[in-house]
Image (cartoon, rainbow, N blue to C red):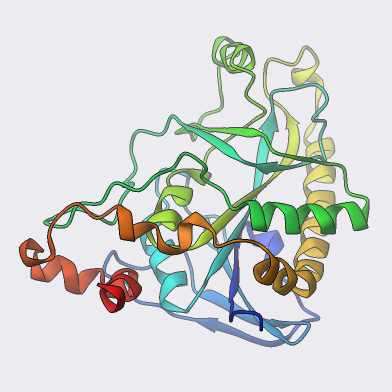
Length: 294
């Protein structure tokens, strides 16, 4: 029997507008870290409830450094999300990853410097492993759908998260290429770290919009071309959303338990008798499974 699951997507405004889907409801969620980026959309996809969170707000009002990442992940956890797929535009650092390619990220390099990156502070300390930061279960499920839809993709790749909101210099771009990094973006860290702390399976579908500035013809790309690629990526992402819900139960049933599912069992350092009571209450939803076991 397949375990219960609730799939959530975090992405841009173009990927949460599904006029044809049933039972659409925008939900206000309160969190101890303030409001998330926007209300969360609950919809019915093939008779399954699915959640969507516009990462930058529906009107794109938050730059990458302003996003309340902790509130976003906590809000999805509060609504019962067991799985998160991030749908994120990115720049390519490799010539074979042309605009329109979807990269199923398996590694990150976090170069962000201005963001709150943990739930565990103020009297409760945890050190979770990020050795394998994304869910193989979700990556492989995404790949099956992308193959079926004949969408160009690559399973596995390294994503470097920069602070932004400015883009790279050519020197930075060339440096990343020498490190054999695949794509560059601004938002998936600390999102992946917080999802891991919240014991939520997480995957990134990085959708290439253009080449980063290392590319010799970078300055020749016009806005019209970029918009065309964005629209194509958005439509392909929507197709992924509509199809993955049908096959995900099979992967959840067949795959071994994901490391994220019980990561706190071996990550919390502070003895329970020394926990700060206010922090414990603040983390009640994240700590619920852990406390039931311990």
